[in-house]
Length: 82
Image 1: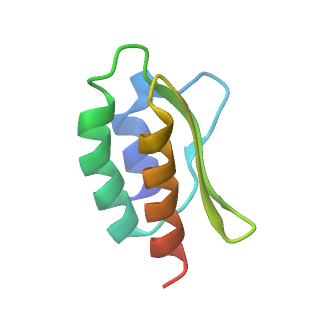
Image 2: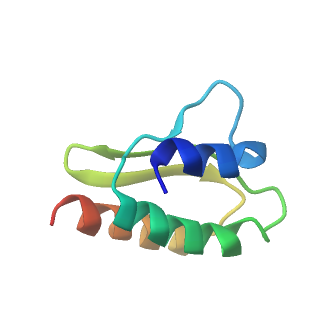
Image 3: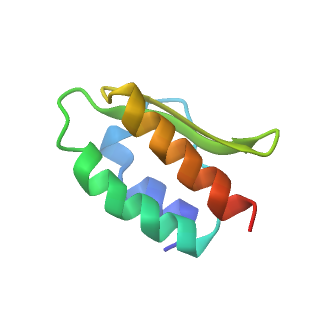
């Protein structure tokens, strides 16, 4: 799955005016797709950006506990720095 396909799949959770997932790594996108199956179960979940910033993963969202956000950012960082 490409990042564009990912954003289209989760478009109803993507905040208006934001680009969503900007990293096009199929292995990462597959992992995020698995995680998002859990995330969308959280009431009020939405996301705006998933990107790499200064070599570290960033996951901007609402409706998730901090530990899930941190875990997701760690996964992004690992996949992007292989």
